[in-house]
Length: 505
Image (cartoon, rainbow, N blue to C red; front, side):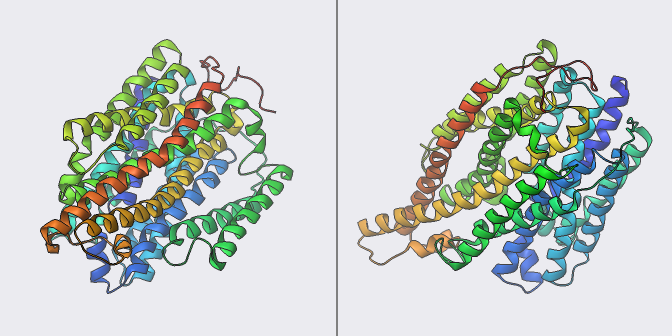
């Protein structure tokens, strides 16, 4: 394909990816209005988010493996149809049960779009040329992450639109993307015997779901050490062990275990998991920091995180072009991992009164680091595998990144609640106010209703507690840097079909 043909197809892929990202983030500021209108409670509030995240995480490796077995163009169109179907049902929902079910369908489609976008690009473009295109994806991810909450808040604040447009707004974009891809996508078809590993897919869905459900509600609905923890965490681990056994014996595994015999692939996947933790921690907790520690509105909080978003997008584009020009990718990964580590360490020093210029620098480092690592870890893996495994390999990296982000944010959120409770109790004790206020950290406080001295204590507690979250992330990011150090740089091949890297079998 010529550069023009690639850009035409990429436009359709990026439009699809954008609506998938938007569907995950647009509800964050709109959910209070949605839940109130449907007369539901906190349980439904949590599950509208959790159900979508579960579906995306579980579906990603399954779609990736299917792309190695059947026509990729057909799968892209099918994932868009599934996504649009879920969006339509969500927009027409009359109760939270229907909305949660629709979010699951949306998530299945989004998982397909996420996995297939990486796979299709890998089939169209050689690893040496791929850097100039993957930067667009990182930039789009950053924009969708910050634009979603802003757009969702604007939609529910506009009386003549209403919250249902949060789910309907992506439908026309997905429809246009489908038409563009139908006209422009021309991929080679490799005839193979199809043997779908349905048992492996079922075990991935079951084990991942149990672990994510456990980590989402532990410390809130039940204690970390309790019978639900034993059943959910123990069941997830047991099913995961059974998954490894099944995948080692089946002819066409969803997650080919032989990929992990390659040192570069194994280390890149491990580093990607940690990058997912850092990325989701940045996008999740920085918004809370600006709203609760610095008393900003939701829209203003989103705007204050733009230094991280812009640096992620711009640095990702520039690093991709440098890789295409030089053919060197490991120095970019090393610099990116170092920037990410510096970013989380410095954000760990933030307090409620930290100068915003300093925060801009900290966020720039974190965003730049993620921008240099996120897509280039996928590039390193794709450069090492055969074309027959490109879909499964790409989806496995995306799967571990999503899984790391989901589990990491849930665990870090529990740590944050504990630390905020501790700092609140300590601050109130200095004011002569006794009593255990730790439970207050489990719910968002109404800052405007608090007396001045108490409000200052709570804001300080949130600033310090959220900073502790980034400090807790530091050892993980350091391990990712070590993993990148030990990755062996293999020259980027200039063809799609013929690998020159170390063998994976």
